[in-house]
Image (cartoon, rainbow, N blue to C red; front, side, top):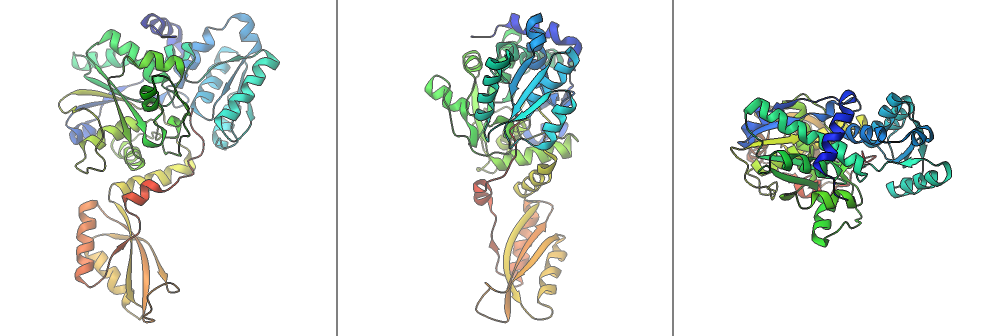
Length: 435
């Protein structure tokens, strides 16, 4: 089923009183880096921290009286569950959410505090979905799909209307491009319908993590396909497939697709913290990651994005519910990708003054030792020498190169342990997907 622009305008009028018209602001730092006029649409400022509230409220308001009394159920491990719980409480509709066991305790607790009945079942999203379908049959509950329910897609499309209106208010013209993260594709489907109706020349560009490229796979096959998606920092985009309704709606309207790697996503989260003072989860930062990767001279970061220099570009920051236990790890990954955190091994004399000579060189360059450890058991055969593993904070990649040159000039051999290739292959325990 394709969603129409009329569905979206009706949703906008329906949910207006319960949804924040979030800011769409010019990001001067990101604009300077990319050479485009980049605006960030801050839907991470919704009450529960994501755009999911739009679709959740629209779906709940479309229930008839009997369905409202019986209540609804959703399978989710994050943002959709929070949106349903919040608006169910506001509207007096009982909400049950089924979460996989990997769902973070903080999100389970938040849903319970909002009045939802929280059940945990299975180890995967598919397990939770199966349990939710059992509850539909047993209790007569209405299932609200997080990214493929037509009412949900229409609700998400209200962001597209706001984007065009806000860019016109600020610039007097239409955006040239909107770069949208893709998980189940409900958001890009709704935004694409709204934007293409109001501003047909605006490009719609979809962004997926390399480890969860479900829209790419669907476009190649001509229909949604199931993938075994990998763990990704953009956990909210790690759905096993795109929705059938979402794909049917979005596919004809999406002009370009691009992929982003884990380093780029981490760096985008870090940049948004530094530049916009905003906490944005990996999924919400994927559009920023794509823009920064396109602007980077590093060929490892270059994406398939069209050249948007000189254009007006909007990046939806679609979620801010990063797990507190994960944020420091994501920031450290971002620092490593930015060259501000580097790790290496070198060999020093295992006699008084050996370590002091190493750290003096590091200090002379202006870098800082974050962590240092000795390895005597597996060091060289020379008993008078010892390997040391160093984690060093620097101002950036240029200072790293300056540091390595200075150390080598002092006779230290540098052995890198954590370059980009290893960073890309590392598995992260990313917790629950914010679906």
